[in-house]
Amino acid sequence: MLELESVDAYYGTLKVLDSITMKVDKGESVTILGPNGMGKTTLLRTIVGLMPARSGRIKYKGKDITQWPAHRRVREGISLVPEGRRVFPYLSVEKNLLVAAGTTSGGRREEDSLETVYSIFPDLKAKRKDLAGNLSGGQQQMLALGRSLIQSPSLLMLDEPSLGLAPIVVKSVYQAIRKIREGREELTLVVVEQNVRVALENASRGYVMQHGRVVAAGTSEELMNDSKLKERYLGV
Image (cartoon, rainbow, N blue to C red; front, side, top):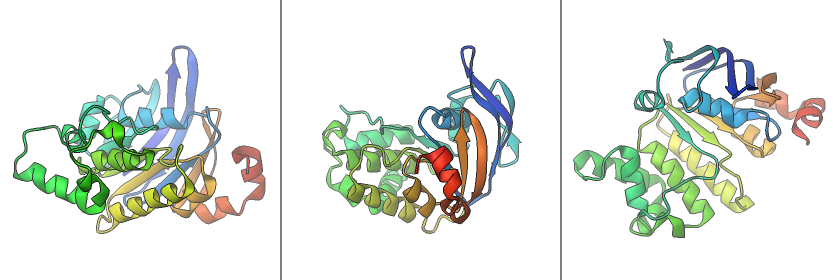
């Protein structure tokens, strides 16, 4: 589904991604771990096209997309739920979803897409006329997930979905993520997460980043049981 080969990215003259090489297979759930400021968010932004890759290659479904603009990548099925949710606070829940679908005109297709989202997030249906800015943090995260889901992605990337949420809300968010994957065997997840335990419990594999480089990789079980790795790179 996704392959990065020696990808570099810069902010000005500052190198933020350094020869990133990784692979994510169709239907996998892969987590990206590491302390703050190590390039994890930049990695997701580079994959979706919001940051240019200075060198290296990004392949999606076997196609070289390194030079594709972000809107083309989204149309082809790559979707990013950014850190901090970033909903449109002065639009209703439903308008937020319709904007993500690319239209506010209604119609049968949009209605079907909305009902798909509402079937997974019934709280959003109950609050569909409410302003997004009036939702709780957990509800805004559900809305951010719903906006991505309505685009029918093949590759769904989540940046810190548990950030700022209470533990019970984090549990609900990951329950929703699992529900999204039900019946969608080809849906591939890449999740950046600070909560190491939650991340590894909900992923099959993981990569650990340090100073813009991949310093470790393995199955969730391998990473969970590597105490030296967790102490050195993850602070746990």
